[in-house]
Image (cartoon, rainbow, N blue to C red; front, top):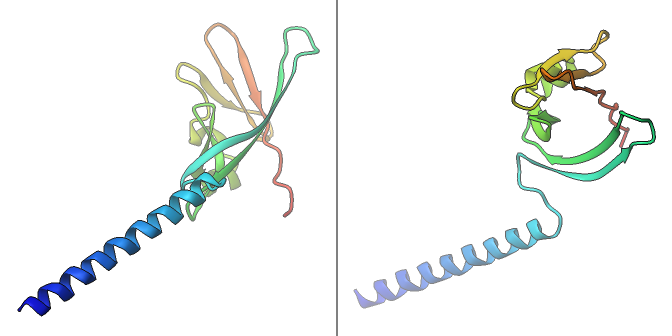
Length: 132
């Protein structure tokens, strides 16, 4: 009976050690620039305010999306959205505008606008993905 308990105890300790090692490797990979699945980060943001009363902002985001998702915009932040939305250019379905703003499509569905009651308008035109 004691032999069985020692074997069980040793097996449990080895399993715990393996789990700890896997967790350490996983957390190290996340610290080394890996994104958690379903998350995005802004990697580049440029602003151009040379024209009065107009700011042109360009941002590049990096996302780690699940299968069937693609990088998009939700509440004015990069997010993983259903790939169907981007392919069909149904931009407003991903809720890209902030609370209190109204989403409208550009005339050729090349992007969208977010309009506030005060008249402030943000126009967004996504750039096509560069071939990898």
